[in-house]
Length: 178
Image (cartoon, rainbow, N blue to C red; front, side, top):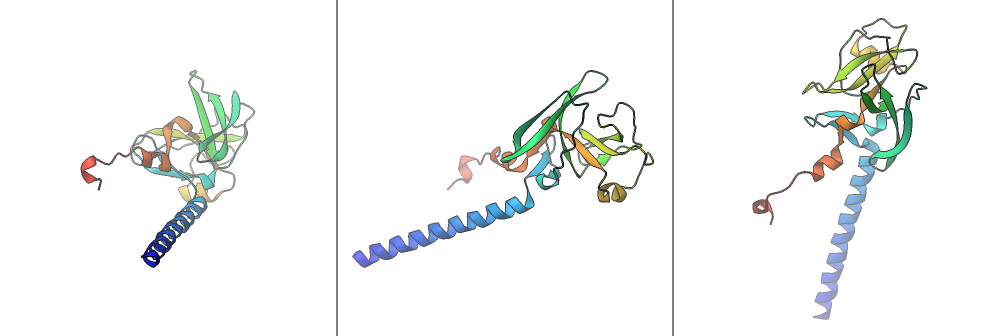
């Protein structure tokens, strides 16, 4: 009887250890993949936290560091458009966005850069702006934009949702629980 209890405890410990290791593997692979940012309107995958690229602007009304993406500190900048609307944005190297060219250099929040409005490719919700050097032609190819080190996007933080947070919003009906 004592041997049976010891074997049972050993099996329980091994299963628990195996699950902990598995969770550790998943956590480390998530770190390599980065946190995924989704369109808040439709859930489309817009960007990865691995593509964060802080671009400071002297025209920002304010900036602050916050943990809005996982446990990673991100710099948010506050801007105001000519109509008085304010936006808190994060900047990234790239994102899966539909860019509405041609780019415009007027009222740019980033001096030396022209901007174009950017929307979700699925639901067309306005998510932010894409920026390119002002000396570029107004319209460039998507490939040229994505491959350049000089381009970036500014996404409105209120229009995004973290994938891991979105997963917690799903409720499993009691009938499906065992």
